[in-house]
Length: 116
Image (cartoon, rainbow, N blue to C red):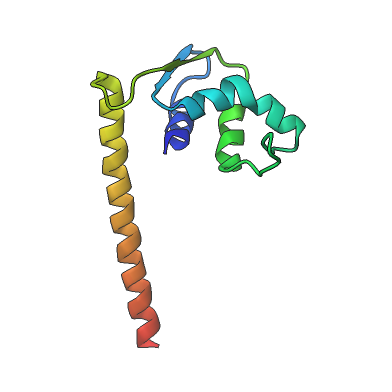
């Protein structure tokens, strides 16, 4: 969820504007500040030779980051940081809506196949 949020944020902002990405995800910060170049040298594999999960999102974010002035900041998770709590609430809201929509689609698909 965090990777998708970073991607959508970058796509929504003007490329010429400096960006500060605040996240409680050490993984997100590590990907783009420490690990990505090494992963690329290894064919997008970890130090243990495992395939990188969410490669498509990571590559899309890397493309959005290219040529931009971006700084990542770690914020405490679930500790009352106003913007982090707001982001978590919105993410949970959209995840519930997506789950509901997928459930409805599955029911519709089942009914359609039963009618045949």
